[in-house]
Length: 638
Ligand SMILES: Nc1nc2c(c(=O)[nH]1)N[C@H]1C(S)=C(S)[C@@H](COP(=O)(O)OP(=O)(O)OC[C@H]3O[C@@H](n4cnc5c(=O)[nH]c(N)nc54)[C@H](O)[C@@H]3O)O[C@H]1N2
Ligand SMILES: Nc1nc2c(c(=O)[nH]1)N[C@H]1C(S)=C(S)[C@@H](COP(=O)(O)OP(=O)(O)OC[C@H]3O[C@@H](n4cnc5c(=O)[nH]c(N)nc54)[C@H](O)[C@@H]3O)O[C@H]1N2
Ligand code: SF4
Ligand SMILES: [Mo]
Image (tube, rainbow, N blue to C red; front, side):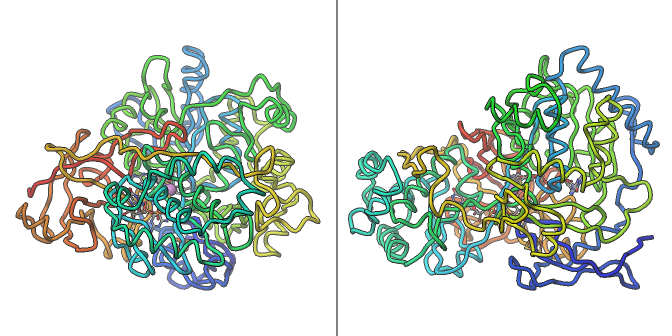
């Protein structure tokens, strides 16, 4: 039984808004109530409202599970047996093939304390440290939306540009072309605070409206209207989320939109700027403190000698013992089990058997590992493949901090006891470290971890050294950077200078290039992917909440009725979707809100309904973000 301390002020376990809520003790188990907090002002979405039901869910893992040999069933075992087995597997892989053969893969839902420890664990004893890419949606004000679908957001917008998938950079260049042509740009700002404009102006000169209309499918008149809406607004923000970024040209797409914001002088002052919205509960904090394979705590670079020396001092180790940059998420998954690649993998808070691109291949790679350990709340699709499964505490059962999409550091208080036999992620990491002989470096208490994180981040870009649990609780969160306890925190970055050596923002010229896979005779349509409101990520959690399951019980494909008719497909028909990677079966949902040349499938389901069986793992060359958003598909009625 759960023992609730009382009604406790906490935050939603899911997305990066980190809405404020209370967890309340009730006769029929725990429930939540909304709490006034700057990001949600007392509101919650349906996922937030139902979040407490997972704390007492009957399918919850409450004991470690293990299989002795591949092919055996998972059976309950004691913690000692499970942890010893993991440590043996790590030692075996490292002794035989070197330390690069052990991988760590974390998720963006973990607390700062867990992310920091996990990063240190891998940094210290095993590269490559990993983290999944993540971000978030929140768009307000006089709104222009760029999306191939007329989503609810798009329908509420003043202007919706329903572009061809993968044509974002062309659109941004076209908007800038018009802004220059019609005298909307801010010459003073460009001169005082940026470099590189001349080159970009030369490049966008060839993006005249009629050409951009051909490339993007957006009528030239609408592009002109959007340029004026943005250029004439007193203040404006340009925000991107996964639609623009999860493409093999994602970085260029984002740069093209940043060029636009800079040229209009809509950056480096209040209520203006470019923003990339992180998505997972702690997608922001995770990347600040060590989950990405090229980073160290405080947004430091693993390849920078000064940064390495600072972290090595805090950790009391030789800088040379810190690994070099690791592989990106998909590159790691793609080579699992190969000779010289990762042979033993520890996963915490991530479900790549559903969420990774080209998931059929990823499932094969996971199966090819010598050893896989997974720490999760439920027996996720990935946990089902593991040799050892460890049961972890949920949000309300462990103290810790999260950093939301604003860069505001929040405190998630412990509101109830975990079920007996369930350990927190920090306890698990500390216990493994102890068995590996590094116990003194890995505190299991979140507060002790946070104290060390403060010191490790000191002087970095994401400086947390002035932030304490008490301040966060007393001040509704504190914004980094916050270099000392008297510092108020920094809600706005870049007011005086940008984060470059000379303080000037850089224009970067970008050309449109097509997606890695464009439609052709065999695969005639664009397939785009994304989310629905009532489900979260790989669905491990939300598919188990009755209200959320009932709202959207299964995967579907949005098809324009005119297109569906030609394929003899009616609403709710089973549809077979095929790409060069694989086949998925989902149900038809006919809607006029989608383009005629495009179909859309959300990614929250596993098995044959998993859209990632279809997606293209083509990576952006710089960010290594997979092209989740665009590939070519054919379809037929089953
Ligand atoms: N309900 C719910 N909320 C969530 C999450 C969740 O799983 N469920 N996850 C959280 C996380 S981790 C993240 S990262 C965020 C993601 O937040 P968003 O990025 O807002 O969500 P997505 O649905 O992935 O993609 C957004 C839109 O991109 C569009 N799109 C597809 N192709 C293109 C293209 O070529 N160009 C453009 N411009 N748009 C395109 C899709 O039609 C889709 O509507 O959401 C966070 N919030
Ligand atoms: N086709 C397609 N694929 C996508 C995307 C897309 O738009 N389209 N979006 C991508 C994006 S933006 C993201 S962020 C990823 C998300 O991909 P993942 O991070 O793999 O998805 P999650 O469902 O968040 O996985 C979290 C797992 O950790 C468990 N968990 C939750 N909290 C905790 C905790 O505190 N401790 C532990 N140990 N476990 C916990 C959950 O039960 C769940 O099984 O998916 C990506 N994949
Ligand atoms: S899922 Fe996101 S928007 Fe919904 S309640 Fe939780 S934090 Fe708020
Ligand atoms: Mo994400």
